[in-house]
Length: 469
View 1 (cartoon, rainbow, N blue to C red):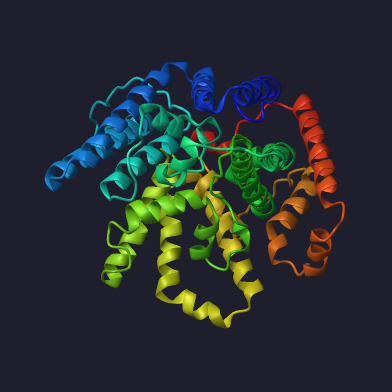
View 2 (cartoon, rainbow, N blue to C red):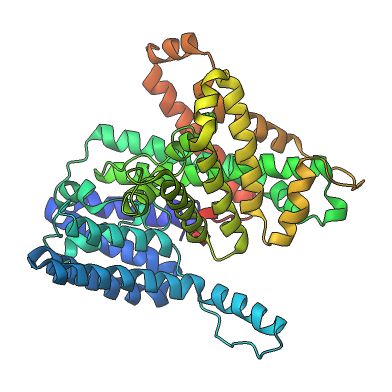
């Protein structure tokens, strides 16, 4: 059951909020937990038991760490907790990838390949595991305390708005909200508008661009060419941003209606002047997680420059692997890690002498090159797609047809993406001081909702891109 499905919009969501607001304050958390279990079980019924057992295990491990004074024993509990969660992630997400990679080597050496049953991937497993690890590690670091009850911890793990694709939330950041919330009329109004904005991003922009992206990235080398390659990568650059930030908007909006205030996950990433800034603006909860739970424990910037650069590269290699069990994700992680090292070595100093618009254009260009690697299925495809972006293609195939809807989405998507860097202070000031601003926003939200629902009625259903991670 996905946020952009009619079943969720017109059945699950209204019924949930009716029950939520009719229930007394003492029962609202129970309503969320039961509804979240139903929400997850609707799509993944065979995995709900694993999620519950794993959460119960974490709660006991966290309590054991908190009440243990002996450091070696605390470290043992921590190691067991982390290894159990990483093992869970590896088994479901990477077993097939590992076996396929080993079989490639075995077959090239004329050995018999390994056999393994195809393992289904639970939706949202990467996000769930990362949150569960933060809970255990933060207790060990004395950053937070364990949940007072298994119910509180289940609420943290299963909270359905962020269950499938984040944002990745730390337990101690919302511990007080888990215990008590008082959603106001303003919270409900803001949450509804934010949800509709996310729905519009997903349905009206990302899904409209999806067919041309599919067409471009499926083209063989002899039919690709410079034009088609850039059509594909520009459209995918906008698709993945509006798809994923749209989900985050919807998650933050739904949580706000309940009284939760989740941290932002995106902040206009395409106006970044560097890859360093890009990762402060893109998927903020993931980049923060990598910094706090990988980069800093490895030594951060407190060690020798060479070790720092290696750790940075390693963190983004892991970031690429986290996104999925494909070699193109590995290459994408290495690509971003290498750019971050290059920036620390010299570019961040040099760019001070370059005009900001040029810095933004250069960064955006290379981010798009990275997105082409991210989107492709095999390293072999990277070998002809990326060169085509630089004009190294002999293809004379006809250009892909771009409909008026897609052209409009590209223009609107670019304007929204770069709006924060445009010089429109007077327009912004006028809008902020507009007497009918609230009514205008409500009318626009209603219009976006009607357009989105109308689009859902006439097009094929499209899941969120990040659900595969």
